[in-house]
Length: 194
Image (cartoon, rainbow, N blue to C red; front, side, top):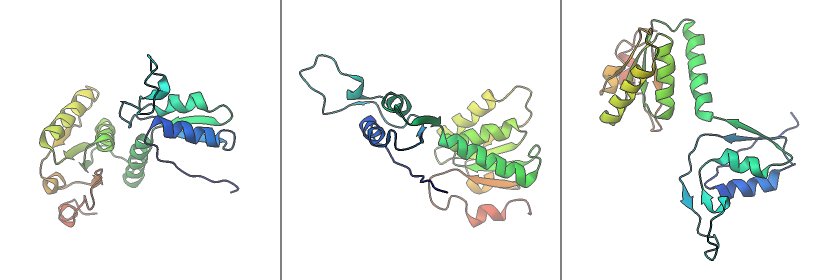
């Protein structure tokens, strides 16, 4: 009530600097995604006569430090949206099942979000079946989760290359892929009842 919330997609540090310059002092808060998503590159506009590049001439991909230098009147809040997604999914499952330990859950798509939720589920005692189109990447992520998890954790992650087989007798399926229709009717049909 009485406020406006909006988002801006940033493709370079220069974009972030320009936005910060415009909104500094006009907004109470600026939330900045702290995960590095912009590749390191030298901008085309720097003065080629200069012997040394400034920090503004090189995109380091760290928007938080860039925005922190520019914002003087507006409070900067650093956050990780992918972690918010992971926590939201985990809380939804936890509320639905009340106790996750002992459940079996398939995670279809194990990139940044899928691998993080998978680790959290395994640490909670959930047998977690992972699926990703790229076999080698899928196996490596699965191995990493099983290495990272606490030694006393009995639950584990298992890579299954067929997404339907990964869902066989599962209590839930998490679609963590950026493709459309990642969870098919055939996957749902092989789940446990309810």
